[in-house]
Image (tube, rainbow, N blue to C red; front, top):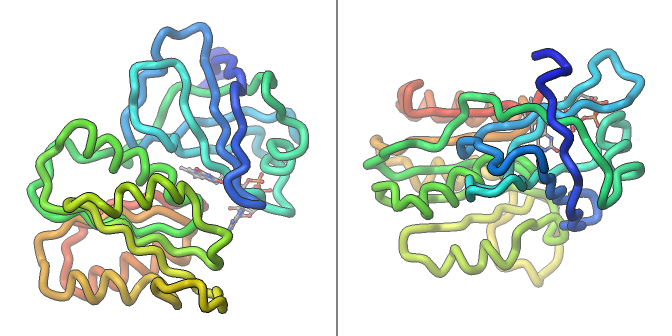
Length: 239
Ligand SMILES: Cc1cc2nc3c(=O)[nH]c(=O)nc-3n(C[C@H](O)[C@H](O)[C@H](O)COP(=O)(O)OP(=O)(O)OC[C@H]3O[C@@H](n4cnc5c(N)ncnc54)[C@H](O)[C@@H]3O)c2cc1C
């Protein structure tokens, strides 16, 4: 893609979701609608001193017919682009953003359970996909979202998750790997036990996995060992 294909994206809002995760809302004024499919990502160009002058970011909202989309970004303390985003970018800043890209997409029609597995900001495209499934009433049995992070303070979209947990067709399973507080009544440890338990006897499920390399590789290997076929396992890797 050449530089000519990048739009001016105006940062219209920034929400501090946790101490190191921010939601950036970006508007593309030259378009009436920023037309993307749930699960896709955008390339953002940065004026940074780095071998690569762009980074990819998954779109965290579902298509809504507007020209605004949302990114969910974690600060990498040593990272060039995320330090730029967290320290230089303010409401009103303009970022060069590409058209939507990628083939990690929401299913058109699924008649099996859908199990989403992610850590941290790997939630972004999965959120886009489950909101899209729920908005479009895609036929599916049940959505499970297994979300791994370290501490209670790392939980994101808390109110939305509480609301989704009340639905009969959605199960939210947060798993905290390092929390020591008694105030946490949910699951502890790593997220792998959760899907191993739930899907031990459900061979028809479809899996959507997103996150950094180690988690994605381990999850895929576990699912293959459990007998799931490659076509049932969809994934997006961040590195
Ligand atoms: C398709 C795709 C979608 C992506 N979507 C998102 C998203 O929605 N939100 C988001 O925050 N990031 C996302 N990323 C990652 C993002 O593109 C950058 O790699 C990230 O923001 C770090 O950029 P940086 O310039 O700050 O760090 P760099 O200076 O590029 O970082 C150096 C190295 O650290 C690795 N790294 C950075 N952060 C972490 C981490 N937390 N855990 C493990 N390794 C890490 C990078 O892969 C890289 O090898 C996505 C990547 C891809 C390929």
